Image (cartoon, rainbow, N blue to C red; front, side):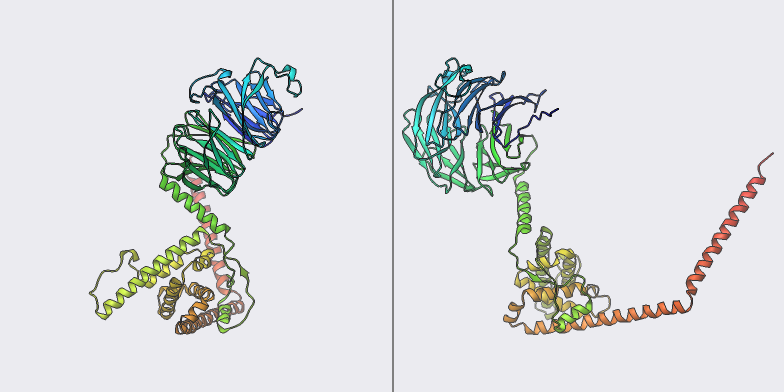
Length: 584
């Protein structure tokens, strides 16, 4: 047997909603046109699959008629199908000599496209093709096209009649008609958009600015804004009166494939080859939100008549329907969230950080001492990758360094008598300036420490080295906080010296370098002696225990066994007393 899957077997290239938003059609590269239900009871069900003659590029519902759908193909054909029965109504196999990239509807009588009219004789289908032409077609449902060379053409009851042709200098990638029916807009392969009067087809205005071909465009409901999307990753907003560019938006990371205005608003949806779907406010020229669910290139999008629904089609063979909710959206929060995500992603993808020879994480105190003494040992070299945690740690450390310097300056001024005594900064949490900076350094995660130090500017790095010198001077004091974190201080000093050695030498801070070398070597020697003394003591203790045949441990085991035996005896006596009290 076989499994009948309702989804598409190829890239979904085009989608369209019916006028009452109850049906959805989608065309794919697998030469199929599918009809989907958006009704409440049968929502998401595939009602019918129609086999078309070629690779579908765009599809449309006939205006105000949900039972008639039109599709254009890559071979230059135009086909109309009855949605209910799935029968072919009309076909024009040689409508164009190239790909029919775009299509839209236009009233024949020049009235607004918003006026009701479901009669087939009331509308033109306007198509733009790679053969440098824009053509106007009239659907005759009752007149058969005898000249069509398509197979089984005798069974097709209707036909397409060509009534007007607009010749252009380059391939037409997108065509649109203004809502009032007065102007026709054609996007060209050369990156320009040209507007023509609908009645005479004479040029009206041209829109220049894109560096690469314009792939899609749309006109706002009030006809005042034209949005163009291009392969140069830009979206441009134009005034339709004079062709002035209102704003250029760097919208996506890849080519922008489709744009659609939300009905009766200046809000715009855009889809791109990078798989993202974005929602823009074209009055404020800012991004409102980004819809994250696409797993492939977004080829086409369409919006409902009331603006509450948007449908996207992508190369992952999926259709996604988005519905607007009543949940409030705060632009500041959305902006902060996007900035954090972009920052983290850019840091993770950044391969421009230079490679720094870092000390091995498991290096012993003796190894650090050998490095200070000048031993040239081979050390592992690893690229630093900054993360959001390292950036946040660097920012917190810079803020702590600034507050610590201010506190030290305040204490020096008070001791010199220049200023009267004042209360310390409450943000120091009752700590001294040195302890607060050490606390901030300690709070940085061990794997992120080197990356956080790498992000410090030279001024803050120099300030941190000053604090390290003070910590090393005070580390001999019993109970001082720096004594417990000498390894952290040594690691920070070594890394900062590796990063800023040339600047420190050029700035003439040789006294600081000599002091750090002397103090760090002395403190590490003390640790080495302490560790050696403790290790020797443990070895002596181990030997004593072996010589005494583990007497303390043996006695402890005996005491435990005696206590267990006494507890068992007490338990047996208690059971016997209970048994004697039972009456007979």
